[in-house]
Length: 155
Image (cartoon, one colour):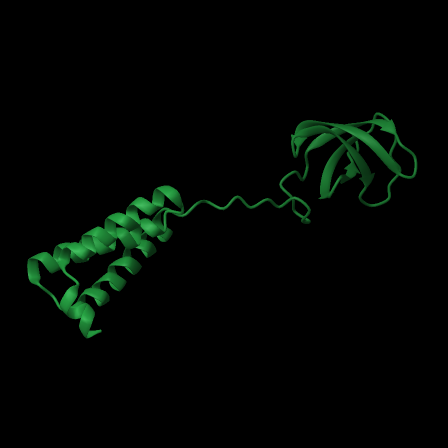
């Protein structure tokens, strides 16, 4: 530690910061850049105030944590949460019409709005009710490649 205290100068921090910032080009993660910016800040502080190496390490850790934490908090990606396959999926109540009987209680149906990018799906009755070609239906759940539906009465 004594070696570093005597041989690390302010410009070493600046060079380290520039190297870390430049490495972001090769490894684009938007994580390394904050450590580089913190190193440049520490180098600038060391140039002005001539701090000890221990204080420089402490400042670098603090600035890195603050910058990275700020980035993760304020610029985080919005998570796209799909509820497909859950009991209250995002396609619940999408209307459609049964177009073909495939036997074994399965039918082909055409929906008004695309479900996962397609309007034509194989469907089954959610509650084992009798379905037939021409029936108007609504989606209740999506299970993989099968859409569970219920018949719309009176429409």
